[in-house]
Length: 383
Image (cartoon, rainbow, N blue to C red):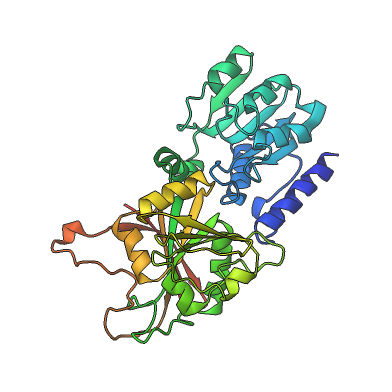
């Protein structure tokens, strides 16, 4: 029965991770010998990583239930409003959960939201021990105290990899704005397009495939109206029946061309933010958000209220520069093509007044670098 439930969960994870085999990613084996705490907790963390970007404003969480050295339950919070990871894992374990240990990537919750507290499920099913990696600092959680009073042993086994998974989530929840990734495709001299506006394509097909996966791991993609008019983009993952991000368009003037392709594919909703109070449309999946002053921080707060937990900024130099200049970025991803375009600085991806003192530069640290068929992907974070 466990294997059947596990395969069902993993099949859904396949769909949510662009058909990347979770058996390869997760390295799943159903039986272990001994109490391998680090191994079990690592599996819970890997499950959480697989659903990052799928859970809206909720955190991605993974859970593993173990009894007598054997995994009897797996869980991942697959979508906002659905069962939490602990509940899924305990349900999979069934009656065997009595006296078992549950390993969780994040401290179990104690609050009532769209689902009941996870601590209730743990107590009601008689688990003996809870081990989690990261304490949830965003909630006044008393789960350790509640579980201990119920006779359950509770341990925190801090894991740096797990903390990195939740660091941006904690910050976003405190500020009530999404986690923000700014993505740029550019020549090695920093140009997103020629001075004549030609931008398709600077980077290669391998980069395009990687960008589709990047979109899949975010709730929404934000761009400017000028980019939409110039490129007629889709901003989808190109996966049939797959998860596509909400498309967010900034158009202060309201000069929107509703004949463009994205307005008619109905693959995901399109939200337009504008200062034009007269802008209207009858298109079923297009929603107009009027603001008297379309300031980026206000838009971000509104997106968060609407359930956008992770936002990908995929725009031209003007919008990209706004986010970078205001330091509204958790992660910066730059795809470099080995090309020199030259010309003026018209379409360089970062356009702002040059700093006078080098101590005032915007500093990042390189987290990872990947060679993508002669193009380079740099993943950076603010220092």
